[in-house]
Each structure stands twice: as structure tokens, then as C-alpha cells.
Image (cartoon, rainbow, N blue to C red; front, side):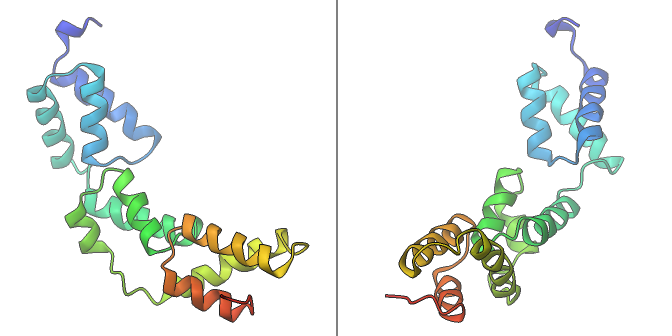
Length: 158
């Protein structure tokens, strides 16, 4: 297929192939189609077609990705936001499907810390505290949540 002959049908066919692997946001598909060499007009036509047919739904994808980030990856609130943003979900949509006042963040942090503690139980209390702190920061937990968890697991906070 020569790049000069790329048309709407080719763009849709390529997008269907991408969507057969996993759901993608509109932005992800747009970026992939641009990278493949399709024109802006062709990309917009393909995106419109896929949206009309229900193959692209950023709201449903955002809800699904949020559930994955929270339940499977056990990310903190900030981590969930970053995860959604990296998958091409718009900031407005992130605000719509996600609130920072998530009481389950503590529960997720407890789960992830109890798993982590098994792997680092042979370290000193100070080393454990530092490792848990860094680990939770990388997972996107708030400092309030981290402090609560460190106190809850009786890891001394200084």
C-alpha cells in the first residue's frame, strides 16, 4: 500500500485492526493513524465513522481504565489520573469519571502495602518506612494517605 493512495477505507481497516487488540481512545487512534501517514481529513472521517458505529467511546473506556487502574494495578488517585491521561483520555473526561475524594484509596493502599511488606520484611524499620513511602509515591498515593498507612502499619513517621 503506497502512502499516497491511503484513503478512508484503509484508515478504517487499520483502525479496526488496532481496536481488535484492545480498546483505544480517540486520541490514541488519531495518533496511530497520523503516524501511519493518513491525512487529517481522512483521519477525521475514519474517527467519525468509528464513533458513529460505537467502536470509539472515550467515556466507557475511561470508566473501564479507571477500574483497571484501581482494582488491578492498585494505583492511588494521582496514579489513576496519570494512567488515564497516558491512554489519551481528556482532562475534562478524567474529571467527569474520577473524583479525588475517593475513600477507597486507603483500602487500595492497605492492600498494596500488605503485599509489599511480605517482600521487604527483613529490612530495618527505617528502611521499610522509606521503601513503603517511595513505593506509594510511585503508585500515585497522596501524602495524607501515605502518612495514614505508615501510622496504621505502625511504621514510625518522622
